[in-house]
Image (cartoon, rainbow, N blue to C red):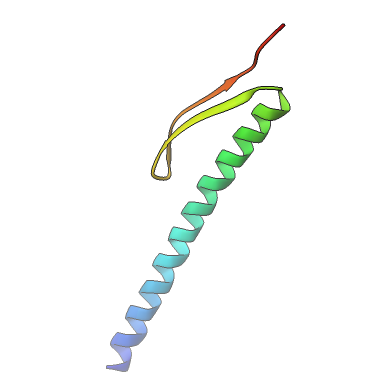
Length: 63
């Protein structure tokens, strides 16, 4: 019984860590792209579906 508890606990911890890393990576990519866009003087426009980026656009108005 302890062995099953240990294995299931380890599996939950591994799944949680994997989910956290996936969420963090997605957030880091979005932050980097939007900051680069703002640095160029543009306005970012992004469409996401869950954690996946569907569309990214940086609108820079030239004078």
